[in-house]
Amino acid sequence: MAAKGKKNNLNTYNGNMSFPYAALPTLRQQPGISPYAPKQQLQRSKKSSGKKRKKVDPNRKYRLEKEKRIRKGRDYFFVMRKFVCFLVFILFAVCLGVFALGYLNILPDYVSLFVEPDYTPKDERFTENEEGVLVEVEDKSAHYSAMDPISGFIKKMFGMENILGPSQKYDSMVEKAESGATDMITSMILTYFPIAMVLYILTALISMIKAFLAMFGKRIYRLFGLSAIWMIIFGAVTAIGGMASNLPPESALNFGELVPFLMSYLTRMTNAGPQTAAGFGLFALLGVPVIIIILSMFMKRKVPYSIFD
Image (tube, rainbow, N blue to C red):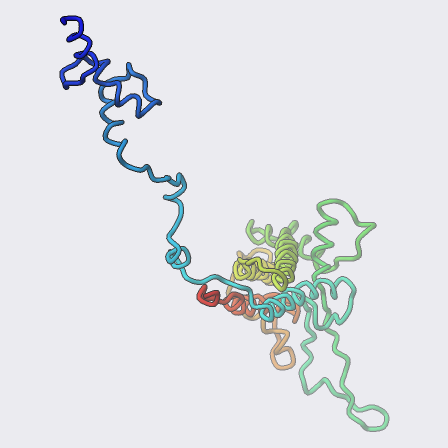
C-alpha cells in the first residue's frame, strides 16, 4: 500500500513538488527553453507565451508614414527653366566671344579692351573734298584686344616670342612697371593682370557648359550667380590694370582715375582724357555678368508635390 501511495503521489501534481517536476509542463509547451535555464528567463517566457509576437520592422524608425513622406521638410521640388538657361548660355557665349573675336581680329573696334583714343575735336573731324562735300576724317584711335595682354604675358613668362603675335600695349605696360613704377602694387598689377583675364575665360567656359547641360535632363545646376560675381571681379582687375597704365611712374595707385579711364573713349570728341581708355569689349566683360546675376535668380522654379496626387 505504501508503494502504491508513493506511485500515486508521483503522478499527481499538488503544487508543492520540486523544481524539475513543476517545470515539466511548461517546458513541454516551450521546447526551445532548456530545463536548466534561469528562473528569470522562465518567468519571461511564461508571460510572453500567451501573446502573439508582432513582426518588427528593423527600418521602421527610418521610414515615414505615407501621408507624411512628402510633406516632411518641404512640399516642393525644383526644375530648371529651359528658356532662361538658354539665355544664360548665350550670355556666357558672348563673354567668350569677346576673346575669340579679338583673337581672330574680327570687329576690333567693338571687342577691344583698351583703346588709345583719337581726341580730335568733333568740329575738326570733317573736311571738304575736291567736290566740296564734307567727309569725315578717319578715326586714328588704336584698339587693343584681349589677346594683346594675354599673349604678352605668356611670352614674358614662358619665352614664346616666336610663336605668339605682337603685344605692343602689354609690352609698354611691363616696360613702365620695370623701369619707372615706384609703387609695388601698381607694378604688380601692370605685370600680372592678364591672369585675371585667363581666370575670366575659364569661369565663363565652365559656366557656359553648365548652362548648356541645364537645358536638358532633370539635374539642378547651381552657382551661376557666383560665377558671374567672380567674372565681374576679374573684369574689374583688368580695368584697374588698364587704368594703372595711365598713372605717372612715381605715383601710387589712384582709383579716382578709374572713371576717366572708363568714360574717355565715349567722350573723346568733346573732352580730352587719358592716353588709355576702356573699349567696348571691357564694358561687355563687366556688364554681361550683371545680367547673368539677375537671370540666375529665375533659372529654377518650384513645383509642388501635389501635382502627383
